[in-house]
Image (cartoon, rainbow, N blue to C red; front, side):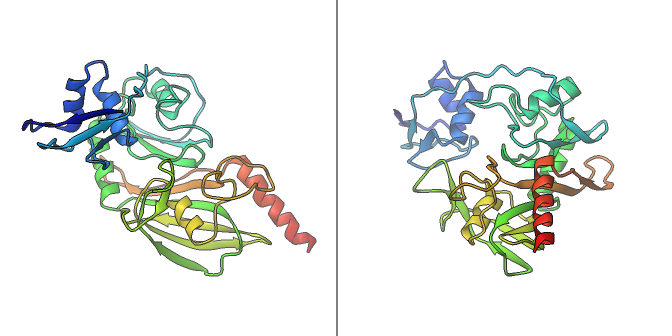
Amino acid sequence: MKELEVIEQVSKRIDAYMAEKYEDISRVAIQRLIETEKILVNGKKVKSSYKVQVNDKITMEEEKAVEIELKAQDIPVEIIYEDGDIIVVNKPKGMVVHPANGNPDGTLVNAIMSICKDSLSGIGGEIRPGIVHRLDKDTSGILIVAKNDKAHINLSQQIKEHKVKKTYIALVKGIVKENNATINMPIGRSEKDRKKMAVTKKGKEAITHFKVLKRYDKYTLLEINIETGRTHQIRVHLSQIGYPIVGDEVYSKGKNEWNIKGQCLHAKSLDFKHPITNEDMHLEAKIPQYFEKILEELKEREKEY
């Protein structure tokens, strides 16, 4: 653990300040360390834009972020829609959105770079070109990528203002009693396990709406809309109210009868304004085959009763 105390007024962003202090670590790598809470200021998480203050105590884990060489890779990805400004894809389960330590390649970004060549927004940074929003590794479904900065800025603003409607479907354990409900519980980093998220008073506002699509013998199929986009929001909220998602290895206890690794959660559709033409857009991503097979099996069981 490296410790640093600011003894003079510098008026710099923390990512720039730390990159100057540790010349062997790039600014992009510093930003990754900040995002993953490997760099803390006065024991607390900050954003890369945080302005360093006199008497700030900065700690950094000695483990260095590995430099990632971003490269285009010919990885098959289903394209739902594409024009000169955006590309919308159906991300498969098990695919990481962008490169990071432990996942230097084989990501959605690597695949998109192969498809779009150099026509991607640069706002997302060196390792996230065009990425406007994300999905967890084991969450499949629809995702927008911006091809230019103007589209990226517009889409980011729509998301910030809650003007993008994100609809998911999830198969959860248990019979959900309510036909529809809203979960309004703040989410933040778990104090017991910093790798997990949790409902906590210190967390940020998180709002999830759901309605029941189908009740099975021991499971319920839900349609979900989120107003906010906190890390693991749907998974944390559903687990918190007693209906963890089937296959979720982090927020669900015990094995599932299909031995699925990773949550049965699919980003089904997006409703938004086209960032350039202002046209109303409604796009859908087909449910993955493994998910369809489970639902078919559950339907067949119903016929047996």
